[in-house]
Image: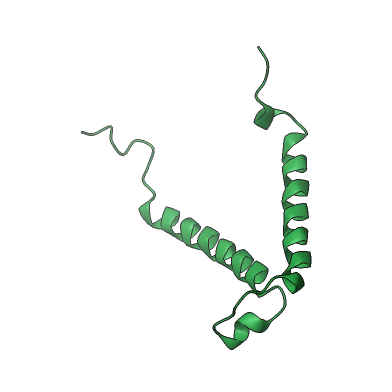
Length: 80
């Protein structure tokens, strides 16, 4: 049986490279696109890339904290 492409050994590295290329292209294209900023901080170069990265980091940290708060033992439902 043929293995799914996501489970092949070289796939994670290729996905990281593709993501880095897309990020680089969006940052390179920023000077050529009219963004129509509403706030003064949005005038900073690559603000939207930094905002997206920081948002992802915050989501990962909040998910980790939430996991600690709602964690149960493996046998939590065995007594029912």
